Image (cartoon, rainbow, N blue to C red; front, side, top):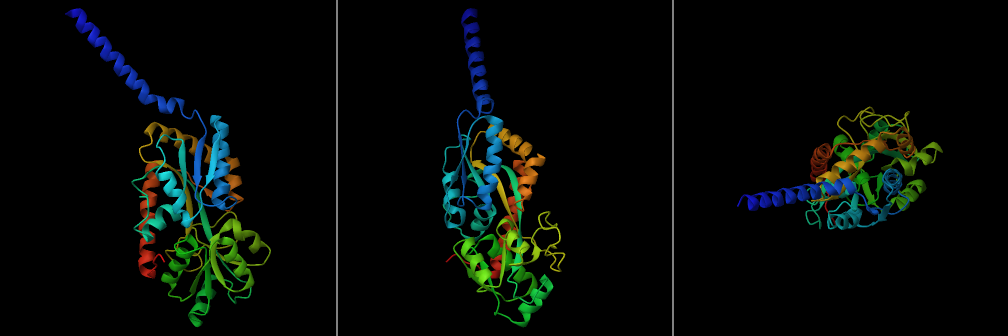
Length: 327
């Protein structure tokens, strides 16, 4: 009897040890093969540039290829949905954006994914301030002058965006709500066509991410009036923030973050977070991102969850005030 009890105890202990080792295995061995990182916009854009920069550093650190999988379309919905439905094993990640995970859910209740329930946040990656630019012919050299001009000519100025619900659309609607101006929205299918018409004077005003317009501001082809971040951007230190320019409470910053499908093992999330935080803290990465007008900003998964909650509520208010609807 004692022998049977001893054997039963030994078997139980062995099984317990095996289960403990199995639960620890994902983090200890991860990654053992290439990782797919879904980017929800086309190659060459700001999201793609940042993802490839960080992905290259992850590849160096782990010796496994980070494969950038560009899945553009529907304002980020297509790629986000692909990542949401992937196997939660750490080998498919999402390069999440403010549009895909906070603006789209606030704008459309019929998305094929749930931005909160379908993802496990890893870390915030980058803040990318939007910059307010105008055509050189517009007789305004500051936000105050633009607001005065718009109030003197209600409905006569046009502003461009890359589509309904895009960050540049939302930023301008927030500016309109805070200043009481009337500027007409002209949505385009992409940054290229929008900037082309802005340069041609068909539209006069636009909020846009910095990489696309900083060279145009530097060459005098566009005028930069203000940046949407709380603090001035190191990329354009002479351009004031919208708040400094006289509009309290304004903030329009696109953000990027790393996410995994929901139910990805916690140990893998922790390992990813630790490595990403280390990469973003390097002076080399800070300098590389600054050249794109972006600011590295890592976080814990919990901090990213809270950040998304605040962002969602902010854009819900803008959407309700402006009466924005999906067409």
